[in-house]
Length: 431
Image (cartoon, rainbow, N blue to C red; front, side, top):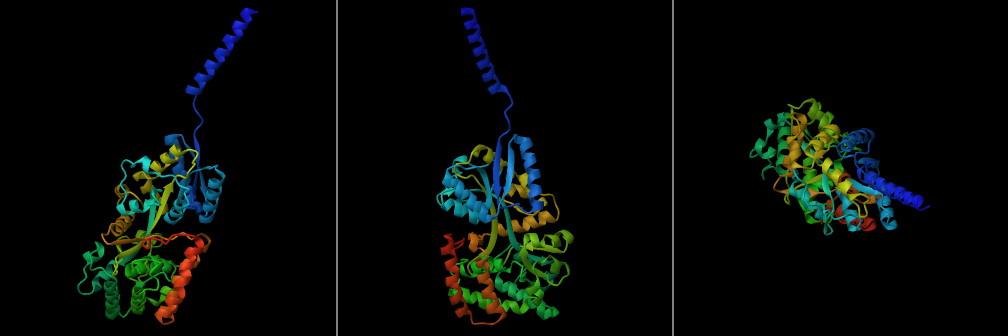
């Protein structure tokens, strides 16, 4: 009986020892995290993201479930998980406006204790906007922007006092007044209006209005909407429109008008002029936008990576952040889906050719000493009303010739009401 008892105890001890050894040395099942993102959601972009994540899993053993979500859906899911105290999302991919809103609600982890990522330097202007509501809310991931594209033939018509270097670098001489003089000079010497904008029904003309010319003339996107500076802005735009190709009101993208030489100078989103650069890289250059009285206003669409409070695996999420901000990965993203790198080192990883030309042009705009960065606001269900107000102002003032002051005074309260209803902060550079 005693022998049997000793045998039984020995067996139990052996089982425990074997279990401990197995736990320590047996291969663990790979960690799996959920990455919820409002970016890379179209089918082609999602397929590209899945390929990148396969590479990440091979490198780290961490599996990633990529969950594409609309802006409102991500906000709703994150809010529900935060309130329930049961967070399933390990990592968030979202635009600055959304991340700013999430940080304001206390849903994001402060990334300050994580320190700097080795081998990655972010432009100071990007770093500055990652710090909101007392925390470092996110790591810059991808950028997109809108730029001026110049057919090199346009340089033959530069107005007096403006040089190619002024436009390319850019210097203080590359102003909106200089753009007006340039467009007027082309018209007077050729009889053609060769400046163009995507002002068609599906074009992104409203982005130029709220994110480019408004900050440049008034110092803000929203709060100075009906200011005296804004009146001068619209007076300028009415004058400029005399030299804008009238077909602009039908164009939704500028690549084709550029390739057909219907315009020699154009403004549009980088993704919408990409085809022109790739087709005839020797014909075009990308240059920073002009500056106005308050600075060189431009939109930088910044997508960031953030770790929500209560993330089930923040360390694995941080490893994914490291992978997605690796310069080699960022160069692949530019080539694959057209989003620009957030790190300076990534530009060096882009092969010579049209994409490098685009990246360098964008870099000059972001790095301009007088850069006045504008961010697209996050207004949730009211997001569609925001651009409509600027388009209404343009159509009434520029196309229909209504008096400027009454139009602005009528629309300004509607604009401010949007932010109050959404509970959203005013977008930079208003803040």
